[in-house]
Image (cartoon, rainbow, N blue to C red; front, side, top):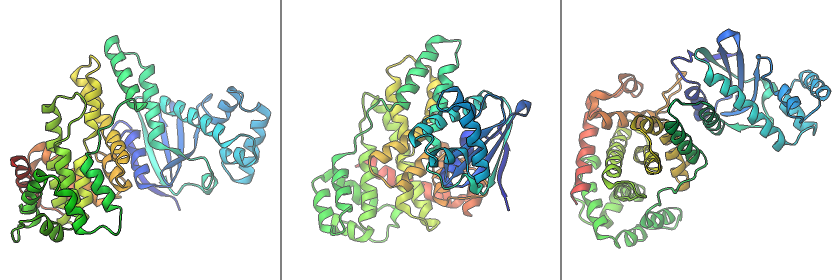
Length: 429
């Protein structure tokens, strides 16, 4: 029996958020989109990937695209449609299994079809979306599976390119900057060398406390900062930690690795971005990481995962700010770009630095609200920590998020105060 997972007006919930929620939770489902003038399109997803799509608008269908591009002759397409329906499989699966089109050729054509669908959708001012599970068996199990994020990214870029702004200079700057972001035409921040050494050690099961201590002891300033953090309220403050060896034994190698990551990234330099602006971003990131870690402990979640998610969630903004210096771009547009693109870029950075997929997902979706009643507790912790730091206290946190984790405002305040103490210890050393 079909289950309605989510239903909303597109005026209040963007298709981006809906599809990213599906991708994040790797759902197999059907997305029914109804636009004005009774236009309807349907997306089919398997494990968060787009596997098929249909549209009732004349001239906007995959079969018509196959004919229009010359990929297949019309009689062959008509025959394939009839045979696929009779076999109970999707048209795309039938075409590949019968050898009528290669998987690469069909994937490119299907991507082109999806771009046309999304352009139609973006241009619409009203409509509704409904998400139903499960996806029908006819569309499942095929080899054609497209990444939601990449298709959306290409569609947004293409839509931007086709939209003409009255201010030509503003439009050109936006297009160029968007293109560089989409083409990954930029240098990512470089992971500090000591972190690279420690990551290598952590990947070796034979690594001992002494191995980690030997690397850390090459940086006396780092040792001082680690000890200040280890003795802060974030870690309970039970007994004085007076040596790096004792700190590693007491807190564990993973926790020490997390602390070193926070310290080193907070002092990072990147491109020609003014240090004052960069430092403001890095400071907020470190505070968010400490708040997230503290809340994760209270909720019996993985504090290391929460810390790294909080630390890296806004790192993508540094890429946008650095690129924006090459263009004449107004602040309003820059803020918009940072809001829309920073999570995607932050996840890219985490991936290039070989952080786990779980961390990449936390960063990629940290502004996406839980939909359809499905909750990722660590994801919610990150959102609460972010809101706490940005608003300067527990009063700026969405009560619905607190309710999800059964957290009292006092718990958030305590985590925030402990985070500020840990942060001040780092900055004072």
